[in-house]
Length: 295
Ligand SMILES: O=P(O)(O)OC[C@H]1O[C@H](O[C@H]2O[C@H](CO)[C@@H](O)[C@H](O)[C@H]2O)[C@H](O)[C@@H](O)[C@@H]1O
Image (cartoon, rainbow, N blue to C red; front, side, top):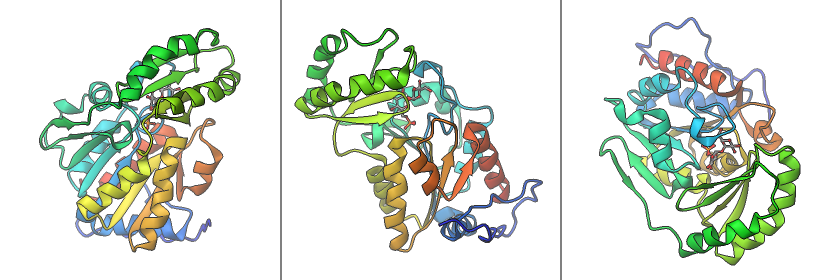
């Protein structure tokens, strides 16, 4: 439900004055979630997606660097809120390399949950923990070249060790390529004990049972968070948005943010309490929050 009269969250005592107005969620629940975050930031969890949210979408995954100002704003916020987490489909190593976050000092409680929560990097220990990949991944890796023999030119595979991602963004007709490849790749993934999950011009072949909803619920419980901000832009973020409904029912304050672009699934945009204009809009939001938190 949208409500243009949703209240603006209060500025916490001692916050720096900011030229930017407070972001205005379009729902009452989102306004309440944002107010909870700003009032008691040490009990808050800020959970952000990477591709499409902190970093603009580009043709090659290895080129997806953060939007200007994104990491600086994240660093500021991480020193004020209880926990900041990048929850992503990317492997932890890729996020560390693309963001350069390991070079930052004083990151507060920053976590990177990679591969939908399978991997975890903690800024306090600077260590990554991860289980061994499922055996089906290796078998699928061997089977993929044959399965993609007739795939359109420009199709490529991203090997994430725990999962394999078929990319079609660089084919002549990405939507047609994805539609043509999905049924056979879904069957192949299932034969190897994996699941196929759609993303922006990709099909992820990944271990079942791990999604951003599970990762978010786990972090909320672990960190005893009382409020949460969740931001995302793709189908992979939907389970986290859905988890918010359940968490709210349990008394948590929450705001969901859509990092918008023409490729964002309608279902995600419609569910969001606040819609910002892609990673650039996300950076503005994070900067305003950092200002409001006096960071
Ligand atoms: O959870 P996320 O942080 O959003 O990661 C999800 C997948 O994102 C990546 O693919 C997407 O971004 C690429 C670079 O901009 C783009 O080329 C691709 O079309 C997008 O779907 C990544 O490569 C995947 O491994 C992630 O799982």
